[in-house]
Length: 212
Ligand code: URA
Ligand code: SF4
Image (cartoon, rainbow, N blue to C red; front, side, top):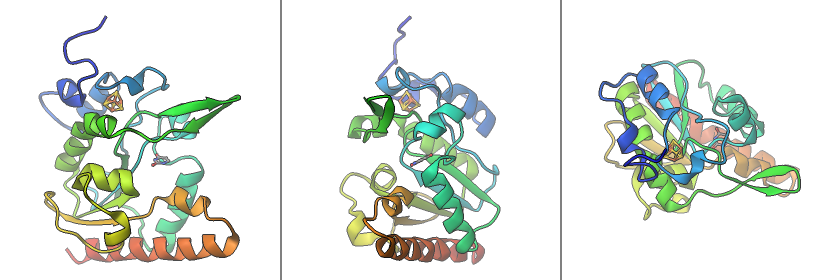
């Protein structure tokens, strides 16, 4: 049954008393936009409740949708490799700007589809609640969707990538590429270069988290 608030954003689904557990439970029932309809489940953020670093991706992919955990597919494997290379171990909370997988069918495969501005906005209350709950020292936006959810549609990743930017959030914030951009590089040299740049950005974030 459709209720008032359905598909008008996640705000109507936020629990009154927030903790990561209550947020996760409430998000599992979210109908704040149309994306819940075709997806298997809500993929909420995961990690320590007082993580120093929060990584924000775009949305779950095919593997994440099936398994119910963020960054467990090919992009996730690359992310974890880069985190290790950057000395970013432990104390990291990983989440996404949009919590349901958006895709189109191509034959028998589900292909990632870019979330619309309205879907990103609809899902933003979950991300905001996660930030207020975890209170990380550093947020890393992985890719343009995360950056624009956190910093507004005018933010240009190409211009500010790899630098700490001023933001409305009570922490340091740095935007970098999405790990799937590394997978999309046309050749091995391109992939290596993209990976090196990505690791360098994560290293900046890890260092900033250690220094307070
Ligand atoms: N890409 C993302 O942005 N997030 C995930 O969780 C997986 C892939
Ligand atoms: Fe709710 Fe976000 Fe899923 Fe839309 S994508 S239904 S706002 S959790």
